[in-house]
Image (cartoon, rainbow, N blue to C red; front, side):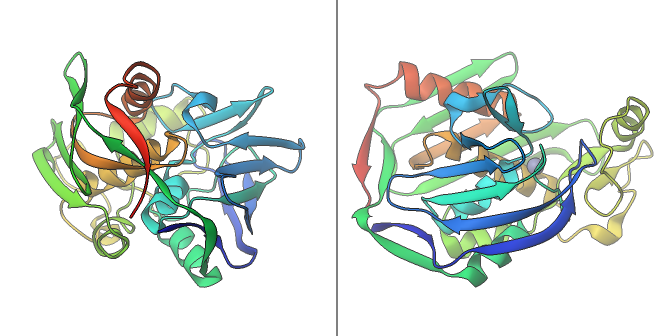
Length: 286
Ligand SMILES: [Zn+2]
């Protein structure tokens, strides 16, 4: 298999940033072999590669930074790039945050898919796990083991009647990604939503871009739900995005995660890439 980019430039109309409330359009441009996924802040004239070396630890969203210039909430867009197998892309915007849209990856997916995927002439590379890599912090566990496919098993445990303990296993292929993951919306709890609003955070958030779970043990806005286990599916969507920070290479291996989130995903990728060089190899994808 060869590396890919999109066939032609395309844009996504103005959307609003979840945390900042700022509006921006997104322009997607084709990029050459080994360019990777790079954001361009046109208002600051700064390019920021979407890789772990540029990522900042954060619990609410995934943020990259270069020369003091940031782009935040990149995880859903990065997830779609991984899901579609896009290796090289230039993403232009003139604000600090990628729009939240409906809280899932579907609009990014539709615009990139419509632009078309083009094969380049260099071979595609993947990270092949050779020996188990495990990461543990408090009650969070992530481990990767060898496999000939890219699969994710994610278990969550939230003290809420509509979630509780759940686990979902997913094999990453373009088709499975479209059918099971890309439309899974982000979620949050009413008590946090109200607290963040009061603190001046989630300025761009409303009840159409997140599933909200209330203190009565119900979904506050069940009309936005596609699946009852959508929070579990969204955690996988986030992880597929965060793990693409590993130099925009898909990981071939079985990933098991328990209660992980953006900051532990980034910590795992740092640990794997920087401290476990004997446990994986970067190989051509066949
Ligand atoms: Zn998310």
